[in-house]
Length: 632
Ligand code: ADP
Ligand code: MG
Image (tube, rainbow, N blue to C red; front, side, top):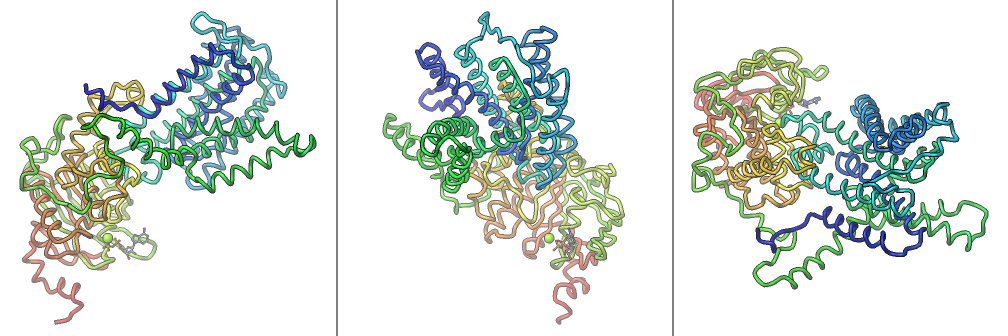
């Protein structure tokens, strides 16, 4: 391996720095007060890390994490004081209870959208607080005292200084584990939960499972923090797990940078130190009466978030990373300069390589390389059969008794004036919308009642008329969401890096699909930086990554220039002729459609008005009437 090209992931870098600090702190004669502060920063950081995953990555806001901290703390406190079990057994029990509780709460609440989810987290945050405070055997509001300390590697961690190492080991390990998770197949889906649920479902992903995963992992991190807290403090009572604490954790994550793992730790440091500093300085300035630090810290936080709404970590990343990278480049030996982020190849040189040098031998018959390909449909086999399909929106019949077939390797065009019902029909076929009546068969299966993800798993790949990409993810990562169902590594495997071979195979597939649409040179750029035409091509690449049998493309050529349309036409013909993929395409550009399709279906006001070869349709008086409004 060329060590000069070996880059350490940010979370690992952070971990290394913290490990060194931990070691120094253990041996350094630092005042106990500072060690205590560092311990609390670690405990808060763990909860905030969970919130980065839950809120920053997956887009679900929770004010109730303190309740999970309480579950971890109380479970171990009770078991170790009443039953005398080892704190480590208490940890396992706490995690088990938390997983069950989070699963049940998540199952009930995660289907809620908008402000309902945060409101629910407040509700169960308050409920659990009162539960802790009202149960006799948990000591009611007095809590539990006399909790034993943890024994770790033969050492009794009775001092704060001893706990420090264990707490920060957990923080570092959690950072590294989450970093691995986020850079995996599961991580890409977790990132897509924020605004990309419909897209992910259309790629075959059961998004609810991943929402639950984020929720449970965040809860487990909170419970872990609670366990450490209980055995550090040697006493617990409900006050530490109330709603105010839950809000505090969220504030830490937001201030540090809720989109970044490092942000969780930075947030915990800043808020803990700020509160501590204000508690010391304000009584001296404003007198002992009154809780001024809450007011002043509130004002300071608002000012800070005005300056950097995405948090301190983001601000540091944007403002300090470029000069640091430049400095590294200067210090590096010549020949190994690493380009600054965002200075990739020019975006306007778009070309699609299909039919020319772009397609290598290993793409013939399948878009796949390493992962096993899907069995293809036989030539002539009916792939899609749409029968008497209707869809009404209230009184509007958007699709009215439409029926047609698509055979293997066939390209069928769906045309009609704006509002004819083409996109609605696409949504009915792909399962994004439910039918009012009629039936849809895909590869012989009646699929009209199946959800979109099941149809995708059977081999339907689609693009959207209004592109649905994850703008803040790389072009390649967007494509890999499409390939999600072809791989099998789990989130647990990703945490321990057992997914590396599969990730490589996935990346190869992703690159191949990008090459098919001519986007291979921009694979590492953010999807947001692409032009609209390129974003449409990216949607096609994402659909191709699932190794589809039927490709549903809704206006893929809109926004492309003339020569780009020609290249796209060649690619689609190649995919149908050489890879055996059937294509159903909606497109307004008649030259593009006429030169591409084997058959056309024409719709007007939801009704099918013509069906046949391009030549037949072109001469159909109803079609001429529909398009030209009866003008001679
Ligand atoms: P096309 O793609 O052919 O331009 P659409 O399928 O988007 O047409 O729309 C067909 C008709 O259905 C339009 O009149 C549109 O306003 C209506 N429509 C589409 N989606 C919805 C919806 N979710 N709710 C209500 N009306 C809709
Ligand atoms: Mg449309």
